[in-house]
Amino acid sequence: MSLLQTIYTAADAVRGRIGDRQPQVGIVLGSGLGKLADQIEDPVAVPYEEIPGFPVSTAIGHKNRFIVGTLSGKCVIAMQGRIHYYDGYPMSLVTLPIRVMKVLGIQYLLVSNAAGGTNLDFHVGDLMVITDHINDLPNPLIGPNLDEFGPRFPDMTRPYDPKLIALADEIAAEKGIPLRKGVYYALTGPCYETPAEYACFRRYGADAVGMSTVPEVIVARHSNIPCFGISVITDVAHATDDEEYVTDGNAIIAAADAAADRMTILFKTLLERL
Ligand code: HPA
Image 1 (cartoon, rainbow, N blue to C red):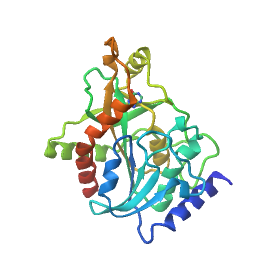
Image 2 (image 1 turned 90 degrees about the vertical axis):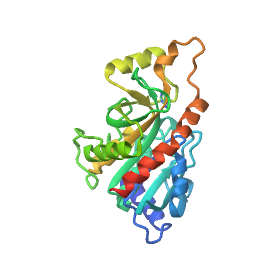
Image 3 (image 1 turned 120 degrees about the vertical axis):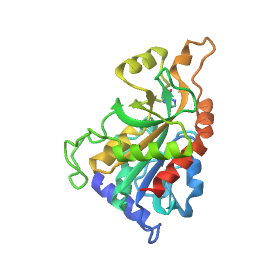
Image 4 (image 1 turned 30 degrees about the vertical axis):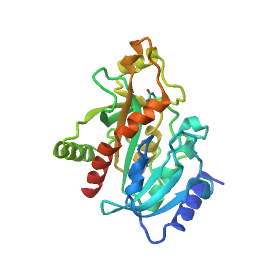
C-alpha cells in the first residue's frame, strides 16, 4: 500500500468511529500530560491498534489512542500517546497520525512534550513555549512528496505560529502562569544525553532537548497548519555536575505530571480563544 493509501485508509477508519464529529484542533499530549484527555466531553476513544496501518508507542505513560470530543467548545482530536522515532517505526509512520488529523480537517495543531533544559536559567517544572526548533532527527518529508498535502520544499521560517505564541503570552499573564520561551532541539533518543552533549546543544542554540514534536510540526507545517508547542522542563542539564546526578525516566514523568494543571489551564483557554 502506498503512503497515501495508508493515510486515507486510516482516516476512513477513524471517521467511521467518530460519527458526525468534525475535529477542528489536533492535540498531541506528551509524557505525563495525558490528563487533559480526561476533560474532553462526549468523548470517543479510538485505540491505535484498531486503526489499519497504525503504529503503537512503547513509551511509558502513553495510552495509544485518539480521543475525539469537545474541549472548551471546540471539537478536538487528541493523541493520548504519540509515536517516537525510537519506537522503531519509519518517519512516515511516526507522523501518520498528523496526516490523518489533517485529512479529518484540523485547522490547528497543539503539541506538548517533556524536555531536558539546556538553558542554564531553567528549572524543573518550568513551561517553555517553543519558538523555534533544531531538527536532529531524519526529516519526515524525505521520500516522494505528497503533493496533496503540501509542497516539495516547504517554508520553515515560522514553525510555531507567532499569533498563537502571543495568545499564550496573554493568557499566561492573565492567569499568573510563568512562561519561558526557547528553542527545542529534537534528537532520536532513547538514551538521555551525556553532559558533553547537553553542553554541545546549548552552544548550538538549544534551550531544551527532547525526542519528539519536531517530526509532527514539520508534517503539519508542510500542510500549512499553524502549530503551537510547549515543553515541560523535566530535568536540567546543569545538574549533571552533581556527583549523585542521574537522568531518571520516572522523575521525568513525575515532573511532567506536576505541571499538568498549569498546562491544562493554558491549553483549555487557548482553545477557547482560537
Ligand atoms: N533529554 C531528552 N529527552 C528528554 C529529556 C532529556 O533530558 N527530558 C525529558 N525528555
